[in-house]
View 1: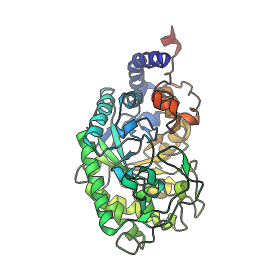
View 2: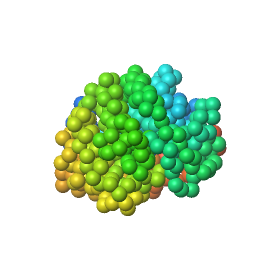
View 3: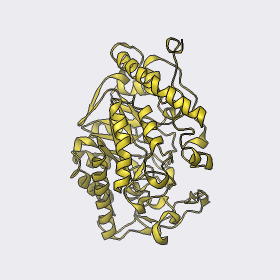
View 4: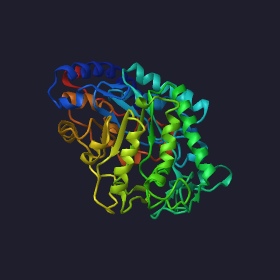
Length: 405
C-alpha cells in the first residue's frame, strides 16, 4: 500500500503538467486533430472529443463514493467529458456489489467531492442513472423481495453474481405492476435531483446492456399488455416518461441517453431490433434534442446476431443533436469516424483503466499501457476491498524523457 501511495502522489504532481501539455497539444498537434477539436454537446462545452465511458469498477463499499473514487475520476479529467460508472437510482435498483448509488444525501455528498475534483481539473462530469432490473439477484433486494423487470422472463445463461460475490442461477423476475413502473419513473427523477445537488453537469440515462430500460424497450423481454408494452411505441413509454421526468430537473442540453441496439449482454437481442431502434432513436430525438445520444455501436461487447447490426451511419440522420459512439474504438478508428461525419465524439472504456492520462497519450503520440488484468476491472475481491486503490488509482502516467530527467 505504501508503494501505491507513492505512485498516487507522484501521479498528482504529473497530472497538472499533463493537463498543460494536453491544452498545448490541442492547439498545435497533428496527431488525431479530429479528437481534439472542442465540441458543443447541447449545453455541455467539451474541450475535446474523447469521452470517459461509464465502467462499473466496484470500489464504493456501502454504495457511497469515497476518496479512491475522487482520485480515480480526477486522474481521468483529461477527457472532454467523464461519464460515471453506472449509479443506481434506488435501493431496489441495485444488483452489483460495491457499485455506488445516487438516492441518498450521503451518496450525493460523496459524489460532490468527485464532481469538485473533476471541475478543478477543468473537465465536466455526467452521472449515469441505472436500474439493473432482472440482471440483479434477490440477495441484493431489501427484505427478501424478488427482482423485477418488464415481464416475468428470466435471462438465459450461466448465472449472475449475488451479494455474496458468488455465481447464482438467474432468477425469474416479477413483472412490475403499472403503478410500480410509474413509481420507478419518479425514482429516476429523484436520483436526478440528487445528482444536481451534487453538482453534476448533467445525467445520462442508462438505457443499454440489458438493464431495466432496455428490458422494456426490446420485444424479447417485454410482453406486457398495458401502456408500457405492445408495439415499439408502447415499449418506449417507460423510457419516454423517464426522460420527461429528468427534464424537469435538468435542461435537455444536459441530459444524455445510452442505447445498445446490437448488444447480446444480459440475454438481449430480438429479430425486430433494427427496425425498432430506428424508431426509438427518432422518438428520443423528438424529446429534445438531448445533450447527446450515446450509442454502443461496436460489436466487441457481444452481438446478438438476431438481425443486421445497426451502425452509426444508420442513426446519424435520426439525431439532430450530438452523437457519441462506443465499443472497441482506437484513436485511429475514432478519428476516422469523426472525419466521416458518422459521429461527434467517441467514448473509450478499457484503455482508460490502465491509462489514466489517455487523452494526453493520444494527443502527444505516447504509447499506451497494456490493458489492465480482468480481475481488477469490476469484481470486488478481498484484496480490492482491503485497498480500493488497487488496480484503480495506482496506474502510472506516462513519463516522457523531458519529464523523467
